[in-house]
Length: 88
Image (cartoon, rainbow, N blue to C red):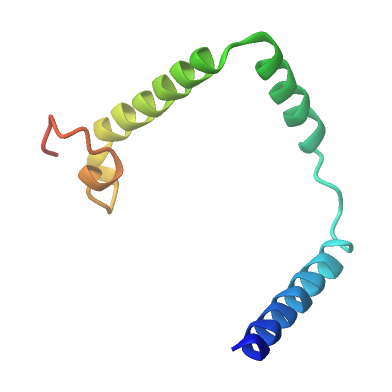
């Protein structure tokens, strides 16, 4: 069993190395620095409770807006936004 585990680990490491090699040829992400700065600002100036509350509000608004446009979606909104109160 130890031999199989070591072979699996070696194959995973080689696949990770192949992905890392491929990523070297891609250009840098221009949005990385602005998002990192925004993330640091958010975590330095707001509590975890405030961040969670705002995130919950954003998810609620997305689900509510999606419910308004449910005739354009191909998946049931009860799967996407299941509050348990409203049957869509």
